Length: 109
Image (cartoon, rainbow, N blue to C red; front, side, top):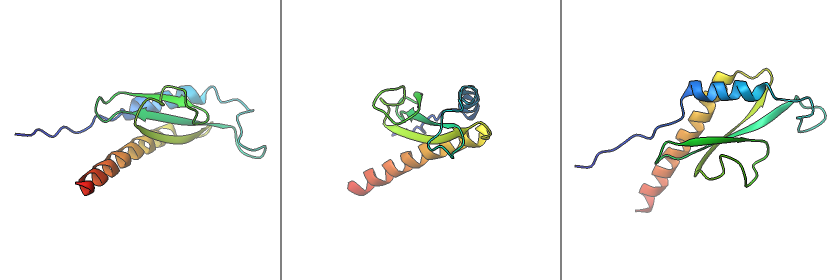
């Protein structure tokens, strides 16, 4: 018998607390353009196999905690962002990647 195990995603409250902590460090100089609001890009890297995840902030460089993970989710975080909604957004992005991977894998067989 084959047992199908659902992937373990990051918890909403973990991501929400992370975003709240990062939000406190947003400086006035963190702007994409001079007319944009101060904010920062947050990327979550996640493994559907282990359920482990990490994050990085800023541009999507080849270094940082998220880089070694196969699935990524990204949001823009601003001082007035609703961190709970952004946490759900991140998880939904990870779920979409997981479903896309299943779809493409099953269609290749």
